[in-house]
Image (tube, rainbow, N blue to C red; front, side):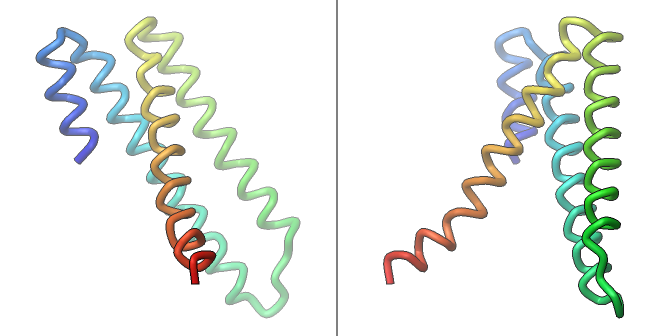
Length: 108
């Protein structure tokens, strides 16, 4: 929803390229979060869960997300910087969504 709103706002204000890359950053962040969940579920279901395997998987995912973002920013400069904007927005949203249940629990 935020991606569509960003695209509409980008079209209205003349920043459609940055908005499109921002949407891609949101998708990239969401894909990374989904892969984190799957990796944790896979490790917790394993007979012998390994922190080292989990740490390597996290590092590999972060390296891929960073490489894709930097490549897009360099190739499509300056509009490609919107990818970082989308990733940052996703992290803010993810932090808020993750902290709301904890805040509700603290109020009890």
